[in-house]
Image 1 (tube, rainbow, N blue to C red):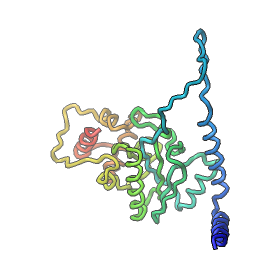
Image 2: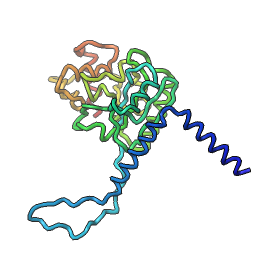
Image 3: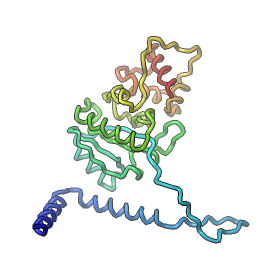
Image 4: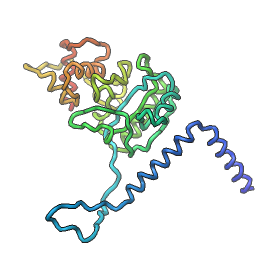
Length: 270
């Protein structure tokens, strides 16, 4: 009876592989992971230095583990179907990827081990971090940027964010958007994204009751944006990125007194 079950299981696995249109890219994934594993297994090479004696032998420390992600960057795909994004991320020529893709029906595709470096942030900066890919997890939401996000999709996202936050001890303020780290170049996850809902669950900052907020004399807008993390090299795009995140209903290029109070409150939380 057991042999029959093994045969049936084997047939089912073969059938599943035959149905998977990404079996070729999956093989490539496994090959690349094996290559990285060989790199990790290699003994660290000595560093030659003139007029300094070389070490007699290699000494490996016994105290280490894997480096963990410290940021979560949320994107929208700017495409009109989840399958298109999966195809893009499994095509070498695209040179882009993410750790997770969440479809409109809430399906979560975990495309890359969280400890590996995805290519999702591009040229980006947040605070003093200029290589965002090396310390972050990228999450892509199937959305063309001109439509609301679906309820199943947001539910799947909240479940995933809760998992990541507790697994890697990611700070609340380190859940941000692609448009935040690349102002002027990116706008995702768009003004339709409910950052207030995420903040209420502990993923990202938000403002409180601003009716009691007083705008300090000589308040420096750029300094406040910089305190939050925005790259203010282009002050206009930095301000627009802030407004897209915290004041999405206002697409103007200036801050009124209400917006200023929001900036005062948010910057004070960092």
